[in-house]
Length: 373
Image 1 (cartoon, rainbow, N blue to C red):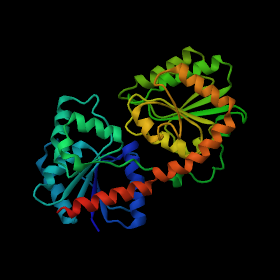
Image 2: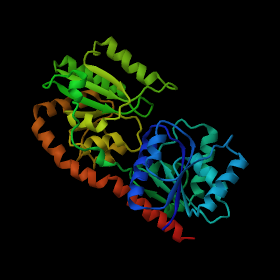
Image 3: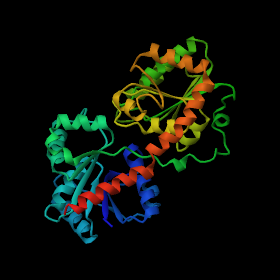
Image 4: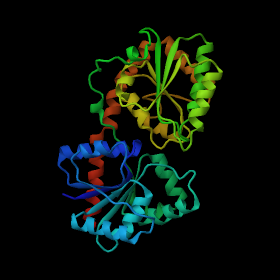
């Protein structure tokens, strides 16, 4: 088998980190030889250790720390690594120099856009993207963005799409403690959920404006925002709290912060509402669709892609509160129809975006690049 080293910057809680964690849990079940090399510990350190995948922390003092490159090179060669799979462009850049002349192949997963990157970060991307053995993009739309912006079309054979995967084992039996009971939400009240940290890629403020419209329509609901406030960029969270406070919504809207029981929240919810500025994939949307509840998401191209062009969810025009309200009111009039359709779609979503499917595609790419030696 092709032995793989996964490179990750830190072990904090986030979409990229959760995806790799679920992947390594899948690796343990298939006995695929691998190693995790990380730079910084974090909230998920214990969870990664529980995968039983060998782990090694290496921390460069700066971007061109030659001693770090030598340590990384010795580790990879000593472990018999044939493919390095970096999760961030910086890790791919460091691995490129560490692996030079060893025959070790380099794979980079591209999880995000280059929006907001400074000049140095863009130069790093421009250097590394043409020099990997394979770039794996999490959506067709993201791949198109980079093919055009970084002139990767002459190297088209090295550019591929591998959708993110979700470990649907998390969606097990309902927990003994009801979320409604925990939060004091009466059984007959409409329960709506949005999952995602308050960061620039998301647009929770549009959802707040939509909720104000629902309240003015006389609809009794409770809305749960699940996601943390980013201390480095708090404006997105603070704007939402200020809006809900100003418009008297705080009795109906809860800001729960980060939660570990998202699957349980989804199974008890009546609907999931999401708004995005420029998501690259949308794991939260996939999890909601897989839970079998009606999903409302804006028509950003990636959301069209992961919802099968609106077959598996209701798409509304981006930032168009009138359109979202109109579609949502139709859902309230025909809730049994929407629910039945969501339940039917859940199986298709689980088949398309399972962690098992994700890992099978990764193995195919590892084998292909290793055989090119």
